[in-house]
Image (cartoon, rainbow, N blue to C red; front, side, top):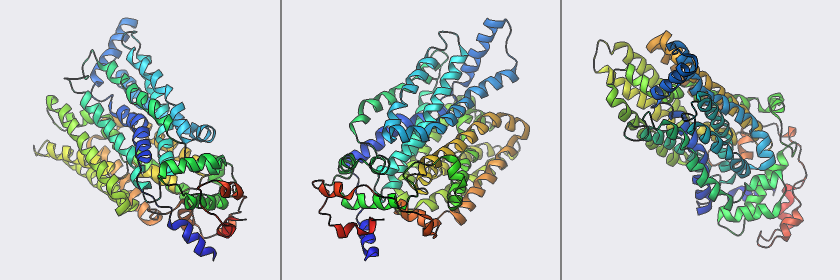
Length: 516
């Protein structure tokens, strides 16, 4: 009888795409995730103008120009300090989402963007390179928060059959942010010496739209019920997102997850690492999040122009070639978004990393032989596009989705802290080290990224199961069959649920399986 009821509880929790679900996905991705992609690429096209500004300011202050090596270090710091801010932001995720909720954290972190935009926008007028670097650091903090919170929010409000589709929405906007930066960075637009501060500061526009409209939509129902035990708000949020009056089956599924938790309280990162039953989930989060950055994609995004220049592409053609790669990113992201619920997570992430590894090996060969074979320079461009396409079709967004899917409610914030911190640490490492790695190893520097990409693909193939169309509880049980370790806790008062008008005619017998 219990198995029948559990099957009933999970059978009807699938849903359809409603306007509130789509609107929240678009707004949160547009005002937060898009900024991450934009800030990854925004320093690429105006790099020479920024370096000239640093040098001119140094001459004005100290009466002498900067040597090439210190100037490279200063610019590398400008690029990579964004990742340091992101790492700090990811460390704050657990505290923020527990206190303010998922939507609340997205909104309360928005002022950081306005502060950073003002600092970068007025940096040239005030003759302060420090304002550019600090502004980049602050935008990194915001991106570090939003890069974890937005997928968490979307994963919790989505029906299980749409979790992959809506969860990949942020990755599409990351690609859109990169493409926007590439287009606005053209010499005819904002990629000029006079306009690069505006180019950096324009990030405030998407955030303003987000904070003006997102407050009209509900908080995560899963957070409201499991973390806050707010039944009334949970039912109202579910009815809004699902477009249905009867949400009984969804609440029962959340209560079942709540019962499986050993504690109602959010666990810490230390507790997560000490829990041996979660070893493979934790290791998987570490591998896919570090692999996402160490695959070399940030080297491509940060230094696209210099890569194309080393490949022999004429300087006048590089900005337009870069814009072409941005269009490929969006197309690949859309392909991943619309196929993830049909193909599943594993084929996209394994295929994406494998293709990136192949292209990293290919670009190494092309760069080695381009001096002897003229057409090899164009092959290197094709391989760069291949790396970007392979990344955007799966590895760009799936690590964040899978980080949320592999853990239950109480462990999810700690998992995002671990994944986000290592993600950003790897981001910083690549951004800061790549110019020097490129100078010392030349074309062979891409073999490091090749090895990482193939390793992650092999790991996912052998370790991580398919999570498509499964509840969080079902996914957790796939990793461990030791149910005795889970101690049920008292669920939300069932009498409150029965008294709610429209929740559904719940008989006590239909809730028997959820009693401890």
